Amino acid sequence: MQKLIDQVRSVLGFELSNEKIALLKIYENELLEWNQKVNLTAVNDPEGVRVKHFLDSMTVQKAWGKRVPPERLIDVGTGAGFPGLVLKVLWPKTRVTLVESVGKKAEFCRHIVQRLGLEQVTILSERAEVVGQDPDHRQTYELAVARAVARMPILMEYLLPLVHRNGKVLAMKGETAPVETHSASRAIHLLGGKLHKLVHIELPGVVEERFIVIVDKVAQTPDEYPRRTGIPSKRPIQ
Image (cartoon, rainbow, N blue to C red; front, side):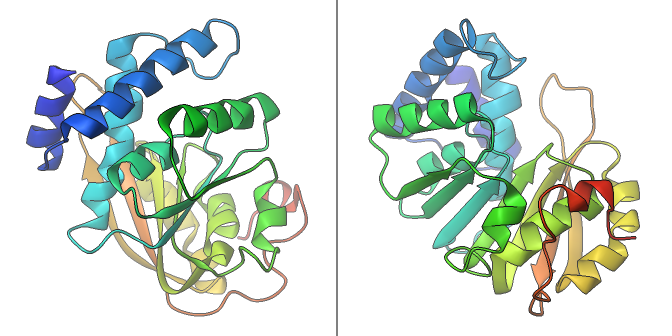
């Protein structure tokens, strides 16, 4: 784990405590063990897990900046817990909600939460469109994040309804981020958002360009969004 400690320091500019490293080591071991039986992620080696999952998830903290960690965070399409559970390790006081519609992945997240002894983590095995219309979750979060879930116009319909006014959406994207973000300009405006900036991310040993798209929530999302399950992906806001 020393290499990860050094990478976090050099790439992201902060230190990982021994306690957090210990939690990430348990997380890594459990992920690799489960992945032999259940297809959780295509990354199945320790080095890949540390860079492409742990370090990549931690780039959200760089995009969030030096402000106080959010009180409430929701991660849509979390998969095996990325970035949401890694952020919970970094921000232990943040109340985290994970949304994952695939049952086996949601089950793994529950296992990890218990294994790491994490508190104030809610796991919803549900579709984002349903959660976005649930009064317990709609426009209640300070931060909504997602990684490699959908194209930007679709992703904005998943995420912006979950964030309260003055909150933020952070979308973790690949090299297509600038083009996708441009194509989502109407969706962002319609759903109450305003593009803040794109943060370019470089991960050691990873050739593909990465970006975090930061969108500020500046107005209330109209009641009809998100539309019912499946519609945002079939008919994205143009």
